[in-house]
Amino acid sequence: MALADQDQPVASADRQGGTAVWAPSITPPIGAELTDEQALACAFRVLARDGFAENLSGHITWQRSDTTDMLVNPWGLWWRELRASDICTVDEDAHVVAGRWDVTPAIHIHTELHRVRPDARVVIHNHPYYVCLVAALGVMPELLHQTGSLFLDDLCFVEEYSGEVDTADLAGELARRIGSASVAILGNHGVVVTGHTLEEATYRAASIDRVCRLAYDVLVTGREPLRMRRAVMVGMKESLVERAADVYWAGAVRALLRAEPDVLG
Image (cartoon, rainbow, N blue to C red; front, side):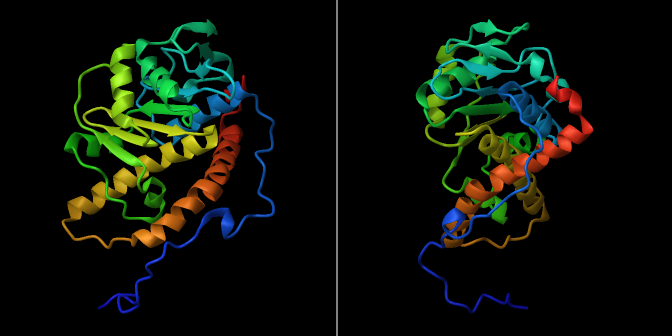
């Protein structure tokens, strides 16, 4: 049976999206005022609950406005157990300047991206399973669902695996290869996600593993997938960035605080 819209003319102009089309007059609040450390601790647990974290691996750094220092998780704590009081501060060269714990040299993945990408105020790195699955296959995930529009023209693949990125030089080369992409899948490794805000970066990180899972599940069916039109994806991307990210964050944090209020401690 033919699909209902196959005989319809294809629009050549990009479809608009985002707040230019519609903006909510009010959205449900989180219900708590969070410090920056509490908000970052929530991001770790939200992503861990969503399956993004691989036990003790990975970092999230947040370089707030008008500073080169960044908030980060310490070495030795799993994302799902992190609390606000565990958050450390490191300077632009990865030296701990505040906090009771230490950080690994792998933090240079973040420091060097922050150094060359003023737009990347938040950098997230870990090894979520389905991202790692497509990274092991050496393929980019096909964007086959409307949420995948979030990554339109904003996703790259870094193929060469060179072991642990534990120096500023190695991390600087990785940052060069990532370029301006908001999401970089690292072959045989994991993923790096960036965002201008914590809310945006967290939503992007949660979404990329789901996109990879869907792409892989479609791939193994052996069937030709139904693809989206680029002109439609452009507007959908604007809507996801401008409307979905903040609402995703608020809902995820509300659920987290009900289940795990100790995250604020």
